[in-house]
Structure formats: C-alpha cells, structure tokens
Length: 92
Image (cartoon, rainbow, N blue to C red; front, side, top):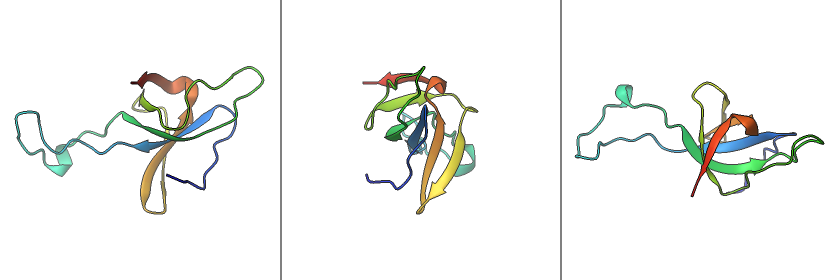
C-alpha cells in the first residue's frame, strides 16, 4: 500500500484493522455495538530522532492504546497516527 503521508520524528501511521462483525460462535454484531479494534498494520514510519531510533517497520501488525492516537481519513481509508511509544506490541 502506497500512502502519500510521511510521519515525522517518532510518529507512526497505521491502517486500522476492520472491526469484528461476527463472534467466534457466529453471532452477528450490530454496527453500533462493534468495538473499534486496537490493532492495525504500519504503513509509514517517521525517521526517529536523535534520542529515539524506530523499532517498528512498515508491514508490522501492532497493538495500541484506545486514546493515544489521532484519527484521519485519507482518500477514503481510515488511518491513525501516533507516537511509537504509544504502541504496546508487535504481533507476529
């Protein structure tokens, strides 16, 4: 995925994963009851700073906090941008 947004310093641009629409047992979750996912795929990474080298890279799937990001819509797709330190884990 080629995105025309370049995060600065220690910021990361993440493509938000789709919300779950069905439970494991097959029950359909109504749209107004779906929780926003707290994971996504890294699509762009800043260059870091003199005190911080970046750990995550483009293509990583990450877990992040609920309130630590700025949401944006670019060309019809939902993204979030946040500091790398607000990412909890890389999922492999």
